[in-house]
Length: 148
Image (cartoon, rainbow, N blue to C red; front, side, top):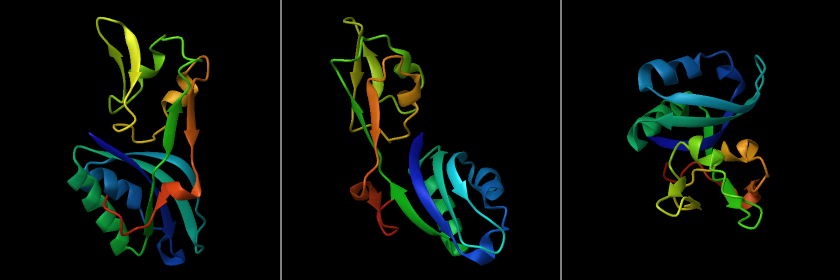
């Protein structure tokens, strides 16, 4: 599975298009709307997490959106774990869609592979001691031309 978070900026003439429906039906993508501000006949902004079976399926869906005039930026959130605060309960490992958080056996330690992390932040609210933190800064927004 391939998961990334994107900021979508819609021109006012596309705000009434059923684009999410088409992403699901025609490109077999899963979506999670993290934030949206879209009104009819106005420019809109949406932060959308897209998951597809492959990088190419997500790219095809994004190309469809670009064809509608949607401007796309990839949001590269950074997740950080406070190792001193973590007490190795493993709750985060059950929600990580890409296996960036996993239990190392036989030690039964919770490991975090930041290279695999997509920044979806599902681990943040599930952590009972709040050892997981998300960081979204200006450096984490990548321009539309950046590879998917």
